[in-house]
Length: 397
Image (tube, rainbow, N blue to C red; front, top):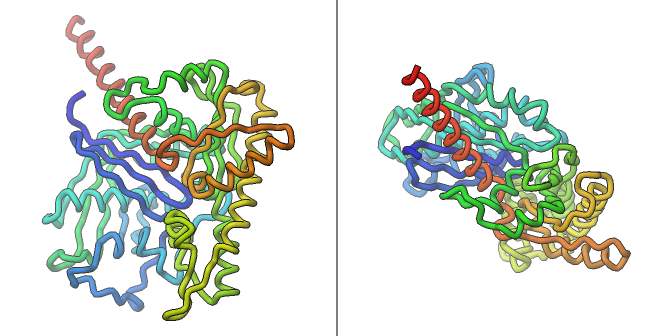
């Protein structure tokens, strides 16, 4: 495969997870799914100081048909999460139809482009193959629309960039040549079974298990996507549910605010605390005052775990294609955060006579984006092969 630029984006309701491959050089990012309209009147960050990081101060303007050329300025990601007018996702959000999808995706691509062209203020960054994900509930009807909105040229202006001389902004012309859309959960299966470099099968045992059937439950921010795999191929009839960790995070945030007088900046701040482990489950509402918040966290994670298993049981019972599955697999960032509670709930489920022996694979929170990178490379290789075949046929012509 000739040198090409690949970009894989798992459009999560909590986090955007990104892998890029620029001529074989791999970069990895994650950004909170948060945007906020920029208000210059309240902008106070001293962007000319050396200790200010661009990721913490991402202010973008997008000029693109994908957002109807609205030309508004937004905080994106970490910088947005700290704003009073931050916009987070809601249950049943339609990713293809929301401006936030394109603002965040283009922002993180522009951020990456600036990191690899540090001294430039006008950058052209080409993506030969972009791979993005959609929930199974939106995949069939919306994948072509998402693809068409992303293909083409988009201009992203990064405003008030730390360390950049006047006029303290950088313009990135993003050129996306082709897009492939993957279904969440199915991409995770690719990430488990295929090698990132060779694209060959790396888990023969899982592929063999798929002959009887494999059921994957991808638990995210606002959705859980169940994908049945039969004979190494997704079973399209298994669809997701509008359920995820965000509703439980919101309850924790509300309880901590009310009872401990501490207000989290965002869901992402709380999620980072959860990911750090129980030793970090505390807040400091006042200097020198530490409050344990595990009593608010644990019940919510337990409730989510029970609901997750209920949905797992419902799907395996209702889908003819996946009945008698040989393996049940938990993936997704939320499943990673609540792994202990899910495993404990699964033991109680077994006691009820309906055992669900869940497998938690390595890197379960990253498997979708890993699968998307594999999907991007496989699709690009397929196109190259087709082009070579057409050229050969024309030469023989």
